[in-house]
Amino acid sequence: MDAIRNWAESLDVCVAKSTFGRIFRLEGSDHEEEIRNTKFTTELRAGLTTFFTMAYIIAVNASVLSDTGGNCVCNDPVDRYCLKGNHEYDMCVQELNREIATATAAMAGLSSFLFGFLTNMPVCLGPGMGLNAYFAYQVVGFHGNGTISYNLALTAVFLEGLIFIFLSLIGMRQWLVRVIPVSLKIAAACGIGLYLAEIGLSASSGIGAISGSQHTPLMIAGCPDRYKNEFGECESHQMTSPTMWLGITCGGIIAAYLMMYKVKSAMAVAILLVSIISWPRNTPVTYFPSTRIGDDRWDFFKQVIHFQPLKTVLNKLEWDLGKAPGHFALALFTFLYVDVLDCTATLYSMARFCGVVDPETGDFPRSTIAYCTDAVCISIGALLGTSPVTVFVESGAGIAEGGKTGLTAITCGVCFFISMFLGPIFSSIPPWATGSTLILVGCLMMRQVVSVNWRYIGDAVPAFVTIMFIPFGYSAAYGLIAGLMVYTALNGMVYITELVSGGHIVPDDEDHREYWTIKPQGRRPWFVSASVWLADRIGHGSESKKHDAASIGSTDSRWEHQDRVVSYGSSRELQTVAAHPPLTNPRQDKVLTKQ
Image (cartoon, rainbow, N blue to C red; front, side, top):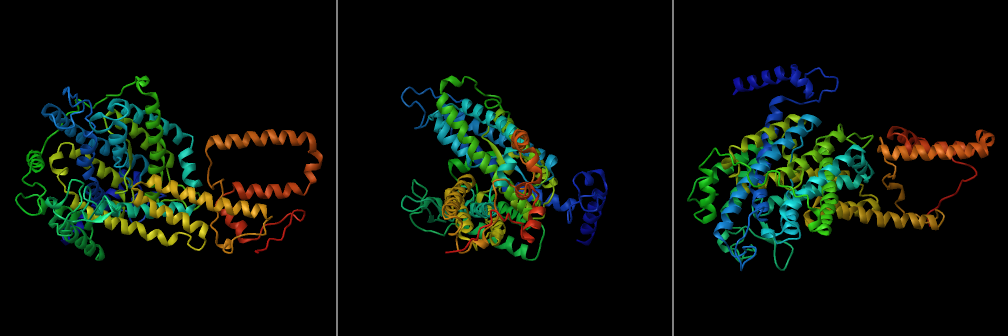
């Protein structure tokens, strides 16, 4: 072991001293902005952990999107959408499933590799798991019985990516992050942690300890499949599933135990251990039961090396928008506002989790490149036949393993590229192998909850709504929207009350209120700066003609200039102003008292 450890340390030093190490600012690279405690082997390990945590998307995304039927044609004159089963149609859907699995791996590999190389952040991308369900079941519909066709929906995704590129270049997405109150941004990260834990507890992507219910939002589950009804509810034998307990013990308890002793690759070891135990057939925990689905998985697994060419999904965009213009516009708008908030909130949360958010500006390095890369990958993904690409919260698993640079994302991307040819292996990682890992990552992300401003009710309630709504609403975007609405309603009412009362009626805990302004710190979007500059030029020109001489000696100009510094200055200037009581205009001085 000592020989292996010494070899790894020598490799870390060698890579750090190379040009490769300087590009990614590894510790010891002598880069002026090198990142502390970063090692080449640590980044590789973190990338592998993220990949094993994300690998389920290959099978899950393929399963969801293949339900649309793609370009498969149902020739049954009675059953228009082949809902009751059609052998020819089912064979086409199975082929579609294999192609989308390849496309999913290709897009996850390409987007993660590009993002890591261009932004040097340990964040991975792939076709999103929330928007793919909206794409499949609400836009295209099961077997194509939705509002628009599969090809037209891909066109909407393609245009969404182009619009995102424009919004990123003008700085709109960066400005959106900075204008969101700090407590809500922290709450979004915590809510995503709970969201991850909920995914890890579910049956489709986790250990199966909970499920939906006809009578309650959630119910206890954990029963073998033979005791489930047609809705997936456990009718009996709750918490007796061997696969659930395998995931809890070998995937969760052992991983947490290893993490307590700072064992490297604890999460990756747990995922591999559970997967290897689950691969043999004819065992209570096998991933290949003796059923039609299990036999199909086993036949695919035995191929080991297989590449599925993209015959039916590659470049299938349809530009005849006149077929359903209203439904197309609705789908495009929904993709836009859900994805922009989902990706923006998740990306900021991951940036905060890995500690690269600038405390002065609220932004992170290369944010414009990050958002543009995400947008470009959305359009490329549409050309490959997949739903919108987004940032994956599972990136937190790699960050928790010590990933701090783009090498983590690049490693994960390379693994996805390899999985295009080893799809039978990587798509056979059972969900109960990764479920406990997601729960552990959720625990790590929830640690930020102490940074929420709980002292002021106007900050605490919106933050709690955000934390609560993200897992219960199963969407980071809608959770953030709910928090923003509550924040606006509460603090808007306080502002109106204070305005009407002339400043005499204010909340008792007003002094604990978190500072917020519609003019966030840091660089504003160029179109906002241009508008302000133009308004200042016009206003200055008109004022100079009327009060040129008087304005020079006017005391009011001093107070206006001071307000300008507070509104537009950096946070360092803001802290200076806060540390020393600002000057007040004696003509406008008011005594504010609490009633």
